[in-house]
Amino acid sequence: MKPEELKQKMDAAHYIYDDTLATVLAVALQLGRPLLIEGAAGVGKTEIAKVMASALDRDLVRLQCYEGLDESKALYEWNYQKQLLAIQVNMGQKDSDALTRDLFSDEYLLERPLLKSIRSEKEVVLLIDEIDKADEEFEAFLLELLSDMQVSIPEVGTIKAKTIPFVVLTSNRARPLSEALRRRCAYLYIPYPDMDKELAILRAKLPHVDDRLSAQVALAVQKLRNSEAILKKPSIAETLDWAAALDALGIRDLTADALRQTAGFILKNSEDMAVLEEIADQPLAPHHHCGHCGGHHHG
Image (cartoon, rainbow, N blue to C red; front, side, top):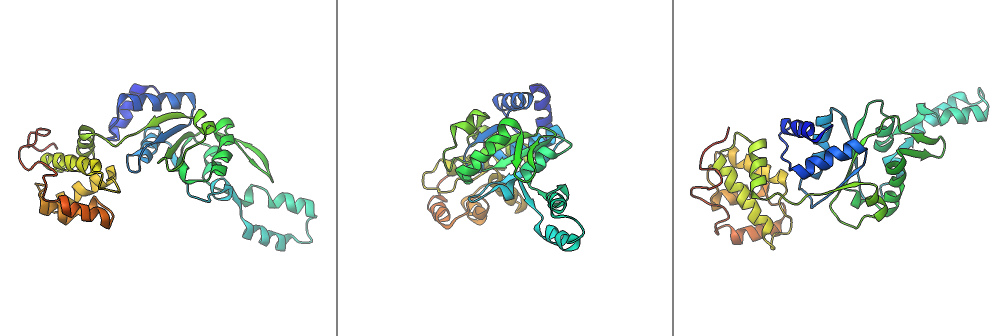
């Protein structure tokens, strides 16, 4: 898929992007390279995998990483209950070798996301989300899949991919990733959006919200993120939640009172709420004519 065609698909999905992002996605797809996306929590890394699945008309297979994640949760597991039942039923009817072969056949194999993605008859988008939360051992295990598009199962042997998934790995940079993993991937870093991009996202996702209010929300979020006192920076999803909450209340102007009433949609811990109390009466957002929107509504 050429960059221009991909841009059209992302436009149709109301996804806000820049030329660099669209080019990297298109080339990684064309070359069959996994894509590693880094950035702070909430900047929209996971959303890219969802948009690509939609643009390519593929299923999204998601592996959520966490500390202690192992092959049995990520790759495959044997259906032990079904195996035990089969042993009881077939005991004495089959010799042990034949029974063992049967027990470790496809009938008893439970596919987890990694195996599912390469055994799928139709190409999928494989999202390996927050790889930095998994252990280094798991990261090392992934290298075979990313390098050769195959996995090894002791009882079965090597399973080669039927189709090649488009692999997206995301990282919040909670720990450094290995050079070996980085070498196998194309790379994107996504910062928090600037004022103009945040406003464009609000307009694309919530076109019914008054444009002046959207501009005030975008500016307020920028100021909250830039405040060193705020511990958990607001995500793009939280920006959208906040604007939707304000709109649902019929609020057209982001006053200090409106900010306090709806703070739970943009800030998510008590420490940040306390900071907000200190700064709520300061002008977080413009209350008069906004230069970004001209004070009118974009439908």
